[in-house]
Image 1 (cartoon, rainbow over the protein chains, first blue to last red):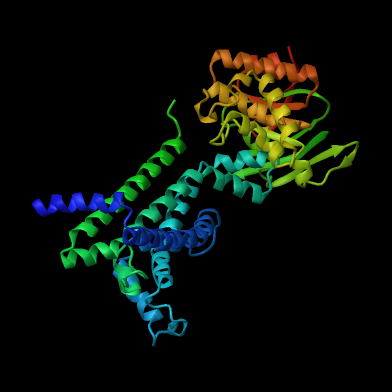
Image 2 (cartoon, rainbow over the protein chains, first blue to last red):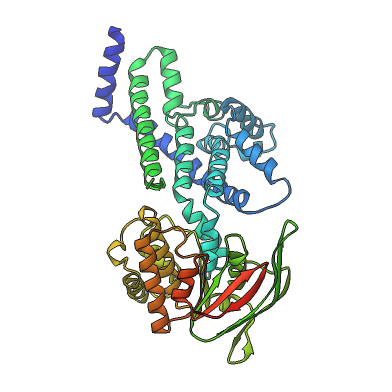
Length: 234
Length: 218
């Protein structure tokens, strides 16, 4: 218990002193997860919109697949990306294994189904009368689609925030493909795992507190977005 | 603009909703299409507003005796205020501005027209309020303002007072009378309320058994 409280005290000291190692790890975490989120949004939002708006054979199957992939085990994704990027793998010639790029790829794979499935859900839940209203006012089919997506904007933002929460807290996949190399691929979650193994709880706790703070901010943002977008009860 | 319906027929799942509807609508004024709930009034309005196609028959629009193609240009000269107004999740002002925004009207002109339209329906004091917080009567008036702001030549109103209280019914009826007085548009509205139909109509049409019959006003 004593070492626990000492750990907390030292953790706050590291945070308040803006420890360069700590700052570097936080910055890399945000960079990798942020990039993965941008790519996942660029892929997931149009896919979710197509699944929500278009009618084509196999659409139901595609939606079910996306919903299933939301629960992808990170270590399985890590293994898959590892095999893909390892020297003997199909993409081994790119030399991306144990680089931040490999971590971005793994996190993107984890985030795309979340963004896609939640964007699809946000779009299909828009009242169909919105499309009719836009049409009666003279909208073209494209303008109708834009109106629908605009109406789903709070749900779409929630999808992006939820995906960010997932990738920020992820450890299994990036540990496998990033290798946890100090100053290069070491991020918050992998550092916590390593430092805990070494018995060095101070840095692990400091990062844990920051990760919790980020998680809290994400949840608060999500809650605020949902409250703003909620249909008021009259 | 003149609208001619010739032998319009529409079925849903084997049930005939419109059997043989023919009518001519031309000149400014208020046409009231009356009939019981489920008699096909809304379906006919949706066909007139080009939201749906009839199974058979013809709907034609004329300007100075030349038939207009049924394209986006025509669709932007007619509009339908739905019985249940589809409100965008934004402010009252942005809701009303939508039709102008998609036509590429400048923000300054849009603002001016929106304020005028909101004043016309008595909602100018709620312009910055979130539209989803309006009462059902106010929402219906918002739907009318949103339709009016685009200055349509033909305005269809589907049961504009069906789900509103007495006070809002009177306000909406007053708006329709003012539109008629100003000659803003040809208004074609539906109602199931005979007294309301007689109060507002220049021409009264009754829908029975999927057909339109013109009825003289008392």
